[in-house]
Length: 124
Image (tube, rainbow, N blue to C red; front, side):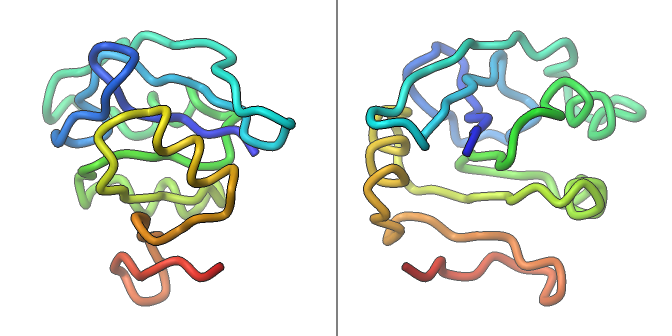
């Protein structure tokens, strides 16, 4: 599973909205050890830019899930149409996110449920 994790410094996850981060670290968690594939620059980190969700989703089209500590409500419909998971975490560090998801420890994550239009605790 490929994750796109919001970051400004390539190590920590900011509290701001996912789409306002400077980078998206792409991490593969299905291998024996999670590893960062690359960090992609966010071409439009500004707030309220027309077509911003679509442009970010195009940049992250090869990712299965988006991980952040905050999300803007306006992008959930587009994300749901592309069948990507949206994971809200209380972790501050990327390495903690990758370790816990790789090990199946989901206690510090919530997943956006489009049918309920809210974040719910993850099972597993």
